[in-house]
Length: 474
View 1 (tube, rainbow, N blue to C red):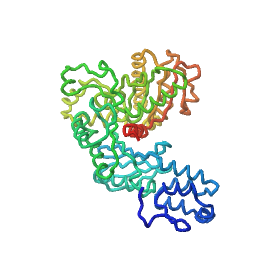
View 2 (cartoon, rainbow, N blue to C red; view 1 turned 90 degrees about the vertical axis):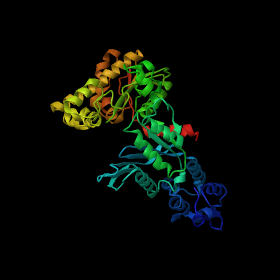
View 3 (spheres, one colour; view 1 turned 30 degrees about the horizontal axis):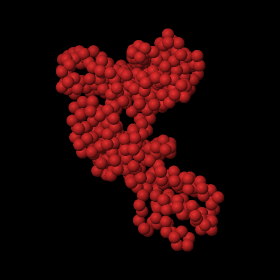
View 4 (cartoon, rainbow, N blue to C red; view 1 turned 180 degrees about the vertical axis):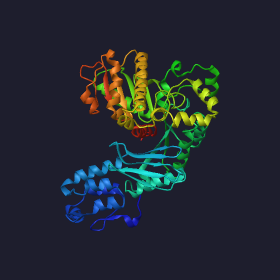
C-alpha cells in the first residue's frame, strides 16, 4: 500500500520510513535507544502508525505490547502481514449482496456481511466483525450502490487501509453450464458468455453478472468466477440425462447440472483428508448439505458421482420453501386448474412450497418447537423420508458407503433430524453415538460403526477464495 509523503514515519534522528516493507528492513538493524524512544510504557508509535495510516488494526494490536527484546517476533508478524493473500468473496443475488473478506493464511474472515432487500424500503445491512453481529437499515437502490456500501463497510471498520490490499475478487456464479467446469478469470468476453448462459439460470445468473460488473468498475484486481455447477461436471451421462427427446439436450442443454458445488467440494476435501490420515483410499462419501436449500451428493474418489438437484436447484429434497422432486405433470395440471402462467408456477414451487407450504414454517427450528402440531410433524417426517430415500439410492449407486456427512444449518445442528435419518441404515452396521450426536461432534457414529458419520461446518466462501487463489497462481 502506497501512502502520501505527509504520512511517512519519521524515526527519532530523522530517517524516513515510507511503507511496511521499509519498516521491516529498519527493524532488522534498529538501535535500541531509537526503538525505545518510539515504544515505551506510554506509547507505541509504530503500532499507531500501522493502525491509523495503514488501517491494520489486527497487526497493530499484535505488536502493541511488544518491546525491543521481542523485535524478532515483531519482524515475523510484519512479514506475515505483508505475505498475506486477502481475497474478497462476493455473492450477488437478485435483491442481495453477500461478501466475506478472507485472509487465506489464517483462513480468517475479519469482516463478513450481507445487504438484503436491495431497492426495497426494508433494505438493511448485517455485518459481522470480531464475532459481533450488527444490523442497520440502509437505502440501496441497485448493485452499484450495494458494492459502494460494501467497500465503505470494509474501509470504515479499519479492516484494510486501501483496496489495493485485496489481491483478487472471487465471485460465486450459480450456473456455468457445460461451458465452465473450472473457475475462470473474468473479462468482457467471459461476461458475454455468462449472459448467454443466463437462459439456464434466469433467476440467478443475471444478478450474479450485475454484481460482477459493479465490482469490476471499482476493483482493479483480477476477478474470478467460481461456478456452483462445476463440481458436478464429473457426473456420468447416464445420470445427468433426462428421459426426454435427445434433441432437447443437444439444442437446449436440458440435463441435470447440480448445485451447491462449492459446499460439496469443500466438505469432500476435508473428509478425504481425514481418510488419507486413516490410510483409506477411494473413499465413498455421501454429503448431505441441509439448510434452507438442500442437496445430497454422492462422492466417489473425490469426484461428484450424482447429486439431487437437477436442471435447477428446485429438484431433489424437500427444502425450506422449495418443493423438491415431483411428477412434472403436476405443474401442467395445477397451471390448467388454477389458470397459472410459468412465472406464477415457478414462484409457487420455489417460494411457497417445501416445509413452508406443508406446515407454515420454513425454518426447521420452528418445526422442532411445534412438532406436536400435526402439520409440523408431517413436514419433518417428509423431510426425513426424502433424505433417507436419496442416501439409500446413493449407497446402491456406489455399491456401499464409507462416510455420511451432514453440513449446512440443519445438517450441522439438528441432531433430532440426523438421528431418525441414520436409524434407517442399521443394515449397513451404522451405529449412532447419541451423546456425540446431541453435541454435534465431528464424528457422531459409534466406535464399532462400519460407516463413519461426520458433522462438518461448510465454508463455501473459503472454498471460493482457495479456487480464486489457485486459478490466479497467487
